Image (cartoon, rainbow, N blue to C red; front, side, top):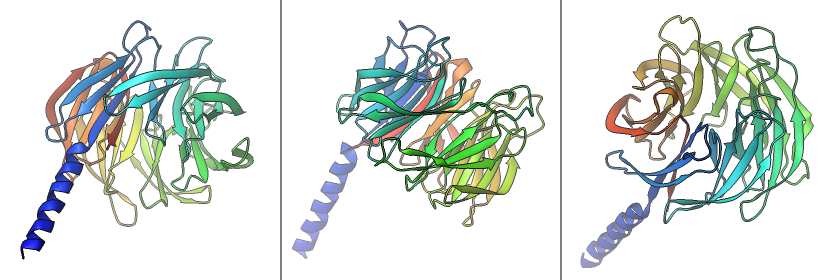
Length: 375
């Protein structure tokens, strides 16, 4: 009996030690418009109350509007100098999780002036970037030290859909990997299309261009951001121009539309839906609406992957460009770009609903939120 008690005590102690050793960091990218101002901010998230404490900030870079945490979590990558005439770069940083500090490594020029999204492959060998203007995909090799090495591949796109005034040309808006890392998916807002390619990290040019599959989205919808369900078979796409949410079945690079729902409470004069994420338990989907509503649309996800509206939560700010969900599913943090604020919301894991905490962080033009827990 005494031995059993001792074992339970030691097990409990080890569990508490492990939990207490975890640190959750929040990385925020901005449109700072001035290199002398802070561009990237790092915060420590208090898992008990949602409070944010700044640990570091980076200046000397212009418009680091999108951030990506590498597959090797020791590195952070940023789209920098985006929306800058005749310029467009991506930059790399080393992250020290013990101190919460970022150290710049290097940067490389992209093929377009407006890089908007980044992702690394499973082994952190390659960094993929898409450009909104001068639309296309760039592939860079990564060094073992996290440095961005030479560009090994570029694929450009020209065609638009001409369905709306914003769609006379291609506008690639994001790129993600399939859960098995065998495919990449690229939503194109201008062409009303989600492109897919097979990906082979053993090739010098890992994106196999001849494997291109054209998946048509609804005309005039403007696909922007997408995410996979944890079941790996469902893909959800937020459509910026049409203000809708599309539900697809994914099979070897092919997408089959199974469901399409409105993301907004009512009919608006101009839709501007933006970001999309699924809770880590796979039970709820969240999508942000900018413009007239400035809210987060919340949907429950059935066992079969179909969506059911739950409610809308005001982001208590203007222009919720992007947001993130903490790895423990307890918090959702929104970047309200035009009201210069981060808002922290507590998640109800049973209902999916959000409740605002008293945590309001003032930061100029926040655009991107990435959250990661480190041991």
